[in-house]
Length: 294
Image (cartoon, rainbow, N blue to C red; front, side, top):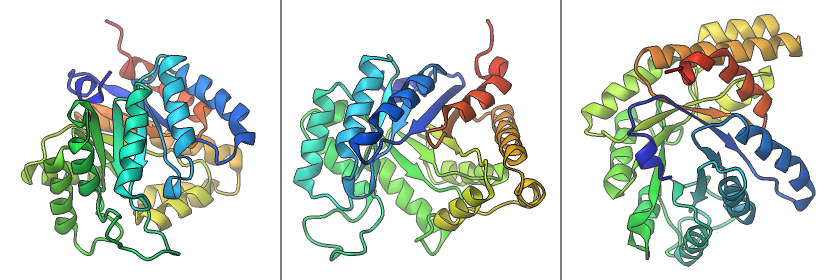
């Protein structure tokens, strides 16, 4: 199913994310993650794409397996900054051949050990989106893009980042998925500003349950996400007790999602970090809200 159809049905959706292993040795373990994540019956599962396309083969393999074996719609990530246009065209063709019709088009991290930019490489995600749309069958694909409620860490001004986001939508993005955020007010302000900019495609709220202090600090450092005082207090109080910190992190994410849905945000994406048991706890806490009985 195309996510552009799923996200316009007027109901709450919940989805999960997993990442493939870099080596074949870990495939047995990731099969367990696939099975356990699919067992949660999410509306779709996204599969990440390693830096520089390092897991591209695994991304394709796992996305196809999710659909063929577990019957869950897959969203395959596709980054472009380290790929040529011919390489991207080949990957899109392979995704289509495998029955994957949903792609999350991302720029990816700029490589540090190569000359960038170069003529054969992309510069921004909107170029990738335009290229996918121009490929054979590209107009039949559902394409998503990333958005940043607190602004992209490399962008000097929030409104410049919104302009860049509008370019992605104008290039053909059908929906947007947010980077993690820990303060819902940040998302609400972002949604208002995006609408004011003329961005009307569905926006999926990305929630990362933080179950260790190290995870919180690294996430904030890499993404520029602000840690609100309430979450900082939780980390300070429970950070030295792994079991308590895990429980507190799940509770915090549960409350975030509850508040989002209460305020009309219909689409929730859980960054599970290959821990389906964490997503299971959250979904169980919100079972009657995420899956209301008719």
